[in-house]
Length: 107
Length: 141
Image 1 (cartoon, each protein chain N blue to C red):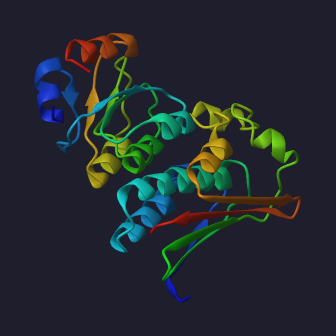
Image 2 (cartoon, chains in turn cyan, brown):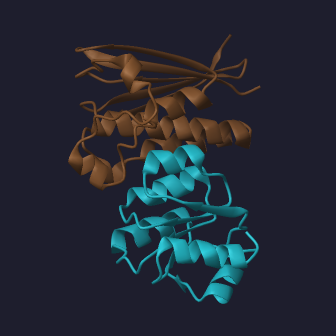
């Protein structure tokens, strides 16, 4: 499944472009933990809204970042994500509910 | 044995906004040299963690990348202090001395050095109050 299909199926709001292939899901907010445990192609669900999440997603080659709980995403994150071609999606529900949606989609 | 690449990057203390930029450039440069993706991914993890350490724990520093024609990649992270008081604790997963500010931004999981050690082929660290030098080796062939 690609990010565009994920957006279609979940209704999560796309904030930046890019359409990578999704291989799985990782949930976490501590950057070193995410860096150490994440795998390429995963959807990264987090409430962390510091600009550095784009560097982590890019270096770890995540397919996209999903910001949970309706956390307000600073413009600088979106600018950086556009530069790095990392799709950022926004969702109103908590991390747990978003993870359940991913499970329902077969991940 | 000849050098095929030599690059240096200066890292500024407390520069959270640019954290990861040097690591991204290292990864891009090595990708252009043809370093395989699985190795690049390990290098990206190690470089990012070490770069973050220079920003949140040390007073900035310098990253030096050298690649020789045998495919050996050597990355040195040298900072001017203040040094790591207890290296064995710093290498223990989950142990952290990160400031409240760093933790607020999602750093300080205590996984930096353990992550670096796990993903690198060679790992050497020396630390004193005059500074810390972390030298990592990766075999690209």
